[in-house]
Length: 67
Image (cartoon, rainbow, N blue to C red; front, side):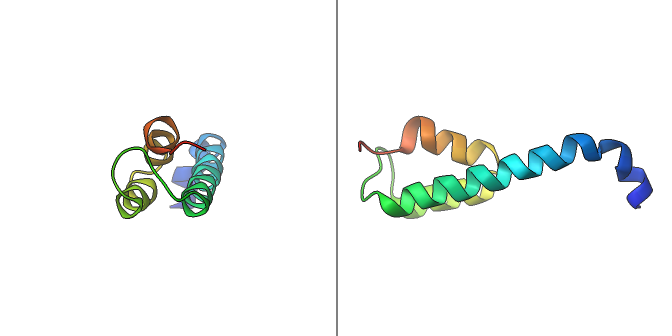
């Protein structure tokens, strides 16, 4: 099975690293700031965790509250 994935590793590894960095950054930001623009913190936590790369990007674009 690993042999089948090996040609895709140069693409998959950076995507996984980017996903993890975005996930951690978005969750830390959400935890440190008391308000979000749209929805609730629980909703944004769900979106960030389960929508992979799109969730954290959406949070930073439309969900992040005013500093």
